[in-house]
Length: 125
Image (cartoon, rainbow, N blue to C red; front, top):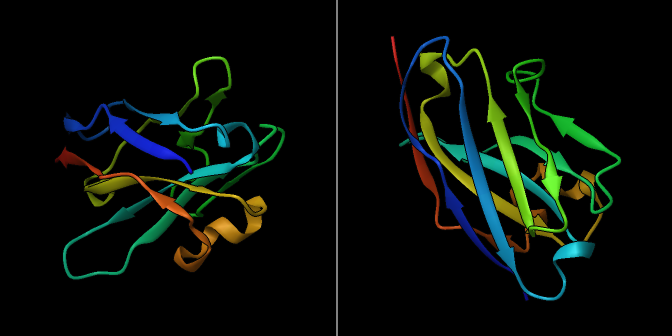
């Protein structure tokens, strides 16, 4: 079992940075692939970024590639989403996710085993 708690959302101007954090608890954290989804009202949840349990592999949606990074800290049981050069279209509720499977299954919501409660990110133009 893994529990996920996000923090760091808020209001930021376009072009600025923002960092989200996801604190995980549960003895299986170190073996879980982790990631982030986002959702805009009226739309389906969208995969943003993922990282393998070892941290050696990462995967990003084309819309955020080159702007976002997803480091994880095993010592702190935390995964981050560093967002740079933010755009108004990045506005969404961001969810931290985890899966006991491989990183590749995390790109689809059906592959997610655990969801955080979500944190709002608003990018003003």
